[in-house]
Amino acid sequence: MTEHPVTTPAQVRASERIPGRRRAALTLVALAPLVAEVTLGTVPLAMIWVVLVYLPIYGAGVLVIRELVRRTGGGWGSMLLLGLAYGLVEEGVALQSLTSPHLYGAAGWGPRPFGINSAYAELNLPYHAVFSVAIPIALVERIFPSLRRTHFLRRGGLIATAIVAILGVGLLRASVPPSEDPGYALPIPALAALAVLVAALVLAAVRLAGGSMRDGVEPPRPAIVGSGCAAAVLGYLGLLYPFGGARQPAFTEGLWVLVPMLVAAVVAVSAGLALRRWSTAPGWTPRHQLAALGGALLAHTAFGAAAVAAAHGAPDVAVQLAWGLVTVFLLAALDRRDRRTASG
Image (cartoon, rainbow, N blue to C red; front, side, top):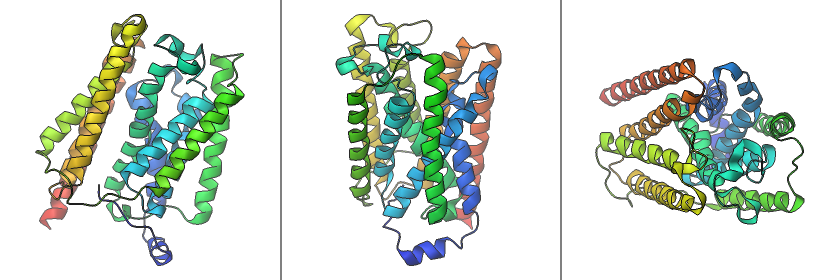
């Protein structure tokens, strides 16, 4: 997870001659909605076509984020900040779920300070930063290691992709809220506040310098890193996602929801700081990164099978288990390739 310097014009021209850029871009476009929605089980088999509605905002949006970060020399901190901005756009503007008093029942999860569905926001904004943005990008950069340090698109392609992402926001806004939340329109002050927050996050991401290596704490073995990431994901999702018939996170009632919300925040911050310290140490290896990705992905899919897809029926659970096997095979293949490369 090494950070990279700003791409120079000469490096841009050289990178455009590296083969595989189009395949890498298309892989990222496909992986983003797959990781974020399908492998969590939020889209049941009976409505799998809905992924096509999500594809423009997820695929194009995450590709634009990756291109901006790699072109400006940002690192994973920049990716996560832009991931938060992405979550604000999707959940706040396109779906209006951050403020709607009706959609998904999110208003009943917990307190609504200033009309914000606080527990829903705490779950979904970091979720988008990690599972919609950072993990798909990290996976694609592992699948296409020769392109890890450069961009996938030429300038024209980047502009076209940004237009598709904007159209994707409109498509989601025009399709989901009218059918799932008719009659609600995001208040103008809330829209203005979201715009300011998104602009601030984008500016911070562009200005954030990449971290330097050799300033972290030596990481534990990859197996421990992977197990820790799995435990953090299971804990975070389990504390904030109402499942098993619960009306609020962690089967709480009323303001007791503040307890799991606080614990989930501690889990997320602790896991993020640990990964930051480990990944900037000289002992951090590709196997450590792969273990972190694997632990997070498998825990995410396991939670989806047990708590999300289970509400849709046995076929959906079976599909989630199949996604878990596909993830294991992909990670094993990437690990074998890393071993061959290191031994060669």
